[in-house]
Length: 317
Picture 1 (tube, helix red, strand yellow):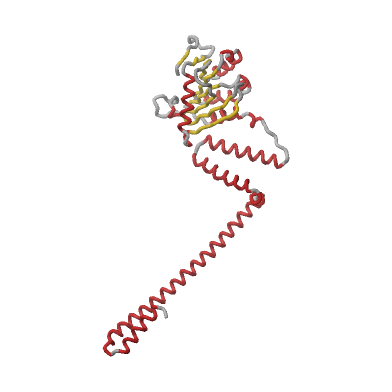
Picture 2 (spheres, rainbow, N blue to C red):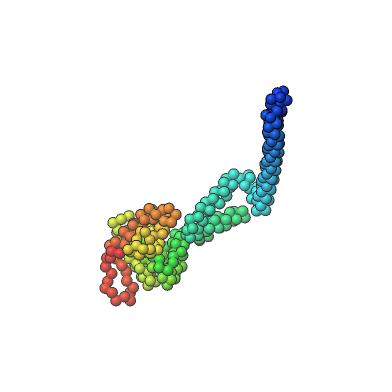
């Protein structure tokens, strides 16, 4: 017998056996009625809660099944279901790509977002061509040495400073007409562009190199050159956005990005690293910036041919 029921019954029995217990029996009877009511109400509430839980579980299972069904139908419509099920590598890649892209967006960094979108588009194009049995590698895939600095220059704003060193061969600038025109356009948009040409040996500073320097000076670029520098030559690009520093556009605190182009002994670009200060790489950006500024120390500034200033002399800038 349940405790809630047996207790009031026991009290009634005791009251009946003793005439002196009538008062207590009456009180016990009332208490027993209350106890029975409470026990019944409690049991009813437990059953109601259990029913609600079962109903919620059933709805959850139904919703989960519907969600899975919708997901499968979506994958089928995109022709992805069979591939993701049968190719574990692709399934992991798709999930990883989605997670990484979300991280890029969270940085709110225009350069990283631009690069990520471009890389996804290029990958999609190559896979699409592979699906047709033929892949064509166009000049855009072979000209990253031009595409990267152009992308950096494209995100500059009026008042920004675009700094660069150039260790690449003269053949690079011979095919960089579009990039040079882009620099002219950015200068008109109030972007200061600085470039120091680095010649590791004196013989590299030939007539052709001088011609390329003259072209850039005429375009409005603030050009310097240095021959046989005391530091290891590096091809670096940096963007500085003037802040509250004492040297607007020239302080490491103002530098947003720094890109390092690895160049072989023949002046060909073999690799590129881009670092973003806003994405947690301030130390590396500052390190590259200090290296870049070091090349300007002791370099020679080149003036426009029409300038009436004295001949170029070494300048610490």
